[in-house]
Amino acid sequence: EGEGAGGGAEQGAGATAGSGAGAIRSGPATEIAYEGVPAEDCEYLVGRLTTGLAELREGFPAGRETVGGIVRGLIAHLYLSWILPFDRANGRTARMAECQIMLSAGVPEATLHLLGAYYNRTSRDYLRLLGRQGGCDGDPKPFIEYAIRGLLEAAKDRVEEIAVRQRDVVWESHVRELLGGIDTKAAERQAALVTDLAKVGDAVPVGKLAGNGNPVLDP
Image (cartoon, rainbow, N blue to C red):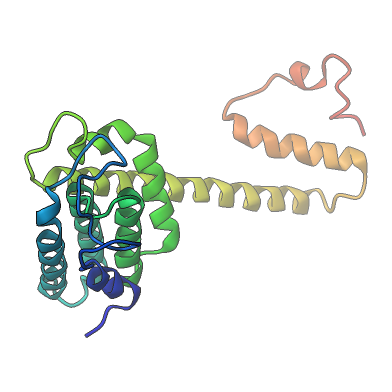
């Protein structure tokens, strides 16, 4: 059974040695200081990665496809970053493979943007867990735990942000309804005042509202 774009990413990982775009490198990876595996091992390891991802896809029970897609996407990202099978663009290729596999498993595109932002925001940890700073013992669990933790934190923050925005919209609509419509500049200022007061979260002395010639409360 195919897996759409994600399946293509997994199947397409098995590039052949040679030259040109998508070809397995024949020498050291030179785009970054981290050299990756020896060139003669690249084709075999990419093949093993492709097979392993396919087997892992079959290992997740029905109803857990999205979870499986997240795990497989992270593994693809990690192992392509370890192998560095191409002369250049290995990082972008690893990230694209991750995104394609996750998208095909039903992960929302917006969630992938959150994950990418998390990688950028925590770049030191990201590089360390890829083994490019401080070494790595080959265990994928730390990277997977790091990425999932960041994904959950980012999703939680986004949900809270959306909730605040929804609350603000409902409150503003309620204020305007209570004022019986906003048809003058004074009414507009009064509506803005009441709306903003709800964001303060504490009592505000009237003197601070009307002092210094503040016209907000004027009719």
